[in-house]
Length: 368
Ligand SMILES: Cc1cc2nc3c(=O)[nH]c(=O)nc-3n(C[C@H](O)[C@H](O)[C@H](O)COP(=O)(O)O)c2cc1C
Ligand code: SF4
Image 1 (tube, protein in one colour):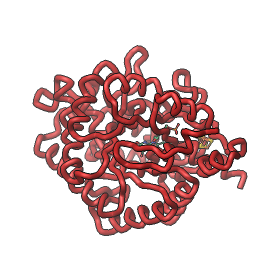
Image 2 (cartoon, protein in one colour):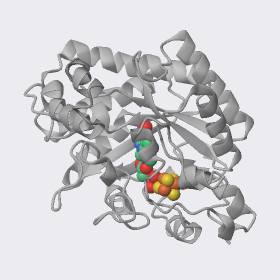
Image 3 (tube, helix red, strand yellow):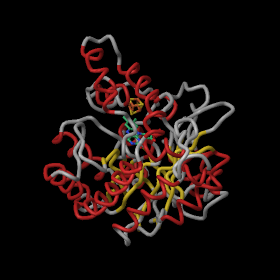
Image 4 (tube, protein in one colour):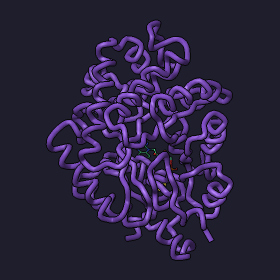
């Protein structure tokens, strides 16, 4: 039973003890609690944890590898995860939010005239002008940030880099936001340039490290996802990204729409079923031979085993299911899969907890 889930896998040049990965998940927890959360996730048997949203510059909001304090934190995190026999990957990202615009909204936030959802929408409206008008000098500085942060990530003990293909890479990729007329805008090749330069900078900085790319795919008819790569343009983007140094693809729906689309509940009208984004993996497979990691509404061991068995995906990433039960892999290994706390995709205490600034939790914790 579950032969594939129990078998080690080569994921773009790195050996993973099994194909189950913890998907990048910003937790919004204080440091000690965060370390313990990741320790538990690692001890639960998954082969690699992707640390979500590691900034390529200094950040006011999350630890940055570019500061001594942040570097020490990530080093401790890597040590903690490694001690449990699990690998660790840094998701390098650059926000595409116009921070100057954000400052304008602080009074409204403080007086509660602007809700978190309103703020998200307001910031999304700023992304297009911000990306379209970003000076080339600033772009080059951000690319240097990817290079420097990759070196620091390796030094801190990370085993792999994931380049976040949503956020700034994603908004440069998309005609929804990118209206530039220079070498970074217009044709798909030009819109892929920023992402490829970010990947190439990481490749140059850490030549021997595998580079995963979080490939955010968007579709029309019906319209889902705003940043990211349109399904019809995958054939142009993928070879360019591969040439720049990508060694595997983590495939999901593009963001900058509603968070409930990229993190869909079971009641979502379009993405409500198990493995809701796997159809994008099929589209990606047409254009690459590199390993693909599927993500999105995965939780049932039988279903996951089947996707691995048919070769549709080489790895399966889960966020909410491993939050609901970090012991998922251990339980499957022991033949106790019936005892797994299944994620019901309600988003109540995970995404809900994050939005309420209480940190990411799960309804199962309420039962003690
Ligand atoms: C609370 C929460 C925080 C997340 N933070 C990130 C993040 O920092 N970076 C990222 O790329 N994806 C993030 N995601 C998206 C997940 O990686 C994943 O793609 C999504 O939750 C769908 O997978 P799931 O059904 O296994 O939860 C987050 C998801 C949740 C629930
Ligand atoms: S609260 Fe728990 S069960 Fe509900 S979606 Fe989040 S992780 Fe899954």
